[in-house]
Image 1 (cartoon, rainbow, N blue to C red):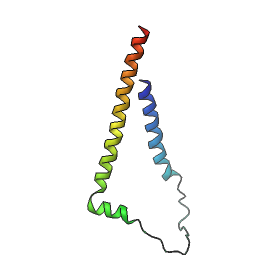
Image 2 (tube, rainbow, N blue to C red):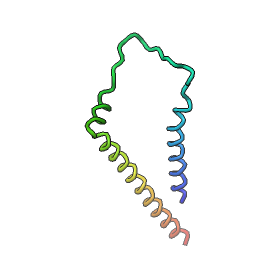
Image 3 (tube, rainbow, N blue to C red):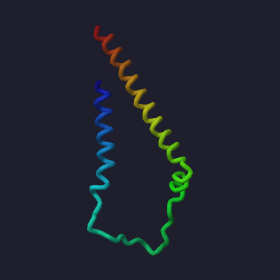
Length: 88
C-alpha cells in the first residue's frame, strides 16, 4: 500500500505540473518579439498527426507506462508478502 500512495502522489504532481503551465502564462502580453531570423515549424509533429501515427506513439507510451505501473504493483505485493513472512 505504501507504493500505491507514492505512485498516487507522483501522478498528482505530474498532472498538477502539466496544468500549471497555463496558469503561468501572461495574458496581458499580446505580442512576443523574437529574433529577426525566420522561425522554423516543427514538421515531425505535423507529419505524424497527418498520417495518424501520433496515436501509435501515444498508445506505445501509455502501454509502457501501464506496464511499469503493473510491474511496480506486483513487486510491491511480493515485497509485502515477504515482509509478512519475515515477521511470522
